[in-house]
Amino acid sequence: MNTTILRKSVLGIAGLAFAGGLAAGPLHHATTTDTGTGDARPVAATQADKTVDTGKLIPHGVQGAQSRIDLDAEQTTNAKAIIAATKKTGLDERAAVISIGTALQESKLQNLGHLGDRNDHDSLGLFQQRPSSGWGTPEQITDPQYATTAFLKGLRQVDGWHDMPLTDAAQTVQVSAYPDAYAQWEQQAADLVTQHWNNS
Figure: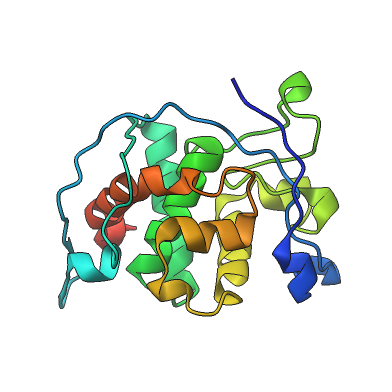
């Protein structure tokens, strides 16, 4: 069952500006998940002109037990949209892994609307971003490309994000009450980037 929490955003403290000149980051709802054991084998992503090794996708290796969910067509489309938005911003596969891992934790890659009684805040979309906290309008936040770009704007403000474990990078942007929860999705996120980087 989803647990609703309030959380402060370091993005607000850092003065990160999003659309419309708003400076606050998310105070949003985090989801709790069942932790299963996933396949923690190294993966390699290929680009048209080069191979990206595991050291680039998962520079620290996976941390802890890994979870994995079967994705439907909509969830797969959302993963591809995150990859496409990442490429459009000029960031690399590692940024896509962090973004997808974050979205797996926050929404299971579902573009969530308002959750009613299960959500007493206005958290929306793949990353559970809040309009009232400056992430954008509901329409913007539920656009996967916009939501990903907003998340990546926050990620770029984190010194050393590229070399951090996924859970640390995600937590610095999202400020969850469950800071280690993102770690469980790193292998599946890397596998999705491996599978879709060249066709997104």
